Length: 281
Image (cartoon, rainbow, N blue to C red; front, side, top):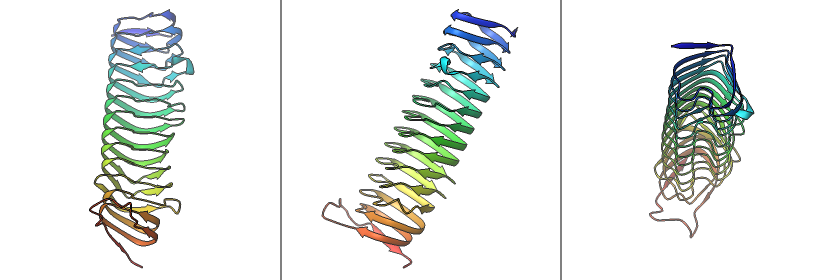
């Protein structure tokens, strides 16, 4: 593997179509597509300042690096990435990618990030400004995760999330086969139109959560006082520890709770309208 150490590059495609490179202490200045159409790349302690540095790249490792704001849309159309101990200040990262592993990564501007990505693993990742994160992605495993940003995980499939703190309006819309464990989910309109959403040991905050769900499962969960008008037109099996502020027109299944402030069943309930609701009080 060719070593390039403590060098600086700029302009258009300075390392285009390179294969088998090890970059150590390299800076990529303003320009475009520094490492386009490459493979077998290792980058350590590098700074990326120019646009689109990694497009159409296969089998690459990025460790202890910095992507500045100027490196927008840095990683697209690529596969087999391992990124560790890296800060990503650039927006719109990771598009049309497969086989990604991110560990100890911070993304303070994660807007429109991780779209159409498949086989993704995140461990100890923190994202902010993450509006429209994870659109149309699948086969995702996440642990030790913190997120601030709305409209996340829309249209995702086959997701497992553990030990997360997710603050996101409209999270998990139109998802299928999502499991969230030991996590806090904060934001309005959680999980609408989802299929096979499973929440285990989770705390739910925000108005009108979990409506229009197909086969919602909740195990040992709690709900904040602002989580009102829950479960409208949902089919579900829910076991809630403590109080639910209000439940409105669930379609079918079971709801078990310590107590419920208000149960709203009106003329708009959808058939079969046979949800069994039980409380301790």
